[in-house]
Image (cartoon, rainbow, N blue to C red; front, top):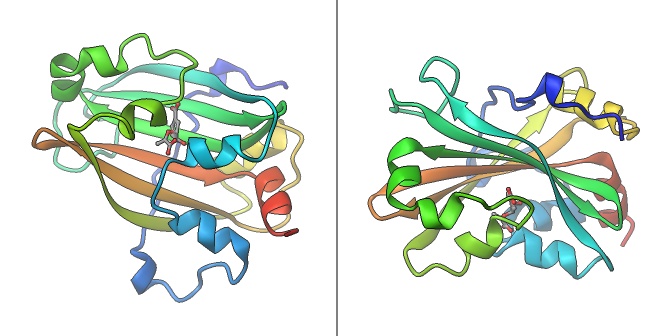
Length: 188
Ligand SMILES: C=C(O[C@@H]1C=C(C(=O)O)C=C[C@H]1O)C(=O)O
């Protein structure tokens, strides 16, 4: 895997849609994965023997570097690959405002290769919000990331974004399904 931190952060500014307002959702099994309300980590683990979180990078983004709406403070970013039996299936990007990071550091500091979902879906203080979806062109940065992972991008990629509510504030989790995941999911 020739992914390097040099090109971190991989994430790019994306236009997200409510599933009810986009008429071009995938008309196959991927749609179910995009809109599934529970922990993606838990679902992925049922499709492999070995599940692994590869951390591509984590650090604070200045207010000018991130797209977190209505936040003029630094935001902590974490970008990972979720790998099933050694194959990257999902690129995930999490944005956490500094106020959450400071007040809830026990949740997020030192997470390392533990899946964030183990925190988000087990803490009574955190509630998942609505799911939005987006399509990523084959010429975008995330397609380039997939190509760098030796996965051929033959059609646009699909992803989803969820806000998680935590004590009056919010963090954002985006997950993009890489070609290897789409191939497996749609073969059923
Ligand atoms: C939100 C979840 O956590 C997953 C794990 C992540 C991580 O470890 O950074 C990020 C996004 C998710 O795909 C989940 O399991 O649904």
